[in-house]
Image (cartoon, rainbow, N blue to C red; front, side):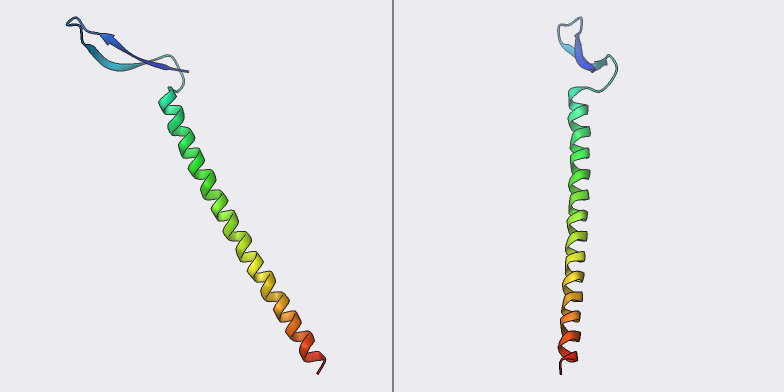
Length: 74
């Protein structure tokens, strides 16, 4: 895991942040996890939409079967 530090300049103020070490900083990890979470949510939405579509198709087929059975008994 990398860390970010700011060196003190000769005038006593702090310089620009610099990354030390390999890997991701905490902020970079949080951003990456946020992207991953958004992708997982999208996948779940797509899965739910597929399930709903298939459920509607099954219901429609059941109605068609009931209608066919109803017309046979006449």
